[in-house]
View 1: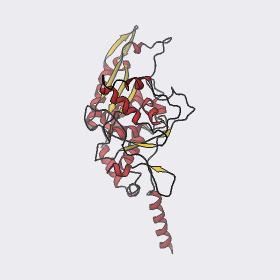
View 2: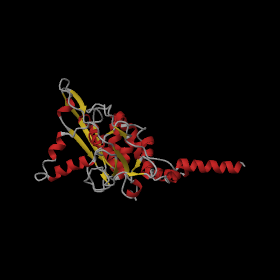
View 3: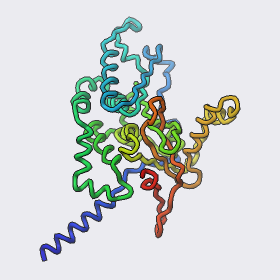
Length: 320
């Protein structure tokens, strides 16, 4: 009798765990402030910041832990260079306005964006000195996680995102990242479908009708560092963007098809992120080419599950 009950309990546990689902990006409130969210901070004219006199933006490329270490070394060196502004001694790192990161470089960029000066005390031990690939492999081999991977809506990239989110970034979201005015962090990934450019910023999430605020930084880093075929892509949901007005930079670019095809293609890619009247899905990977920074959409539309009003992505098929 006890054995039968134990067997039923095990079966129910497996079924429950097998229903695992990756976290969804949140829809944006229709009544929310159109200018709110994680965006490049505007200059405050009546209270000028000396750091605004010189615009400095760093770009951290990919290449695994080695790229993260190289980016970290660049931050250390910039911290050691002293300059003088308005009679005040500052470091060159204080002048950095934005950091763009992809793949391995995304770890360093995101961590410094969240932690600031604490990075130089903790980043080495929390990431660089760890065998993160081994930890991910052990996580995948965990019987509980192995069962979760049975679900078509949960995959290796979700385990990686959980690992990065909890053990590296302390479950921080973009709302927490937005509390730090400078530097502005731009994380990139690449489209599984066609390499269309995308940045993990609120300006980009506007086209998805989504709020970047509650999105976890660790998951964005996972999207940026998910090397094709070794890790499955990260999926984003595109919601109907109620009340969203297409920015002038995009609408004007749509008029330059003949004069500036690249700018026109960029604008079209922004519009392709939009869901229209029905929700659809976007799928993100890391950069396949070192010079490409993008995250993007899948050409696959939403697929309605039989016997349900819910819609789910064709992620399982697309990531195979």
